[in-house]
Amino acid sequence: MKARFSLLNLLFATAFCAAMLNAYSFRRQFLNAQAKIESIQRELDQARPISFGSVKHQILMATRDIASSEVANVHYNSLRDRYTVQFGWTDGTTKKQSGTAIKFEPDGQGRYIGQLYSEPFAKYTVDQDGDRICTPFEIIVKDDVSRLNDLAK
Image 1 (cartoon, rainbow, N blue to C red):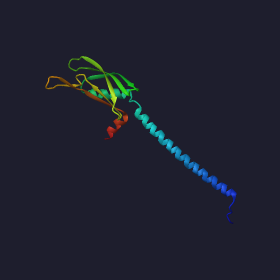
Image 2: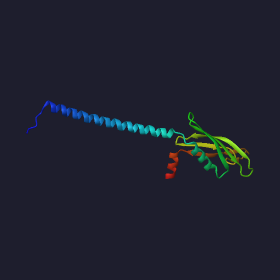
Image 3: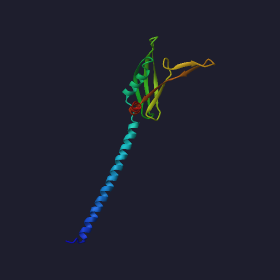
Image 4: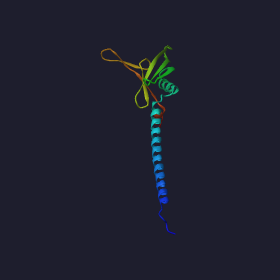
């Protein structure tokens, strides 16, 4: 039996090739869209603020050896990408309660850095002219990804 060339076979082969090219093109578009979605998701994960509970916990852990402290309020300003924390402590010797607001600014690597200028956290020294120089106590609050990366090291 000889294979015969016919117009019907040519149309069938053309339709088959067109369907295969269409499937290939669709798969490429699908994979590109999927990669774009994953990229956007990563950007959103980086832009998402750290949970207030995590911020509070990290501050309390950073200050626990210096004074009995508490975090009264954590506020995130999405326009400035900054945390403001109402922070209080009790001086161990005088039993005096004090408080202040700490602003945590982003460093661009998933961390927020705040500085505490109050005693007993900050250290004061006197220079040769008799001027007091303050070295603030630095608190670093990290997002969950940064904290996990630190644990992996």
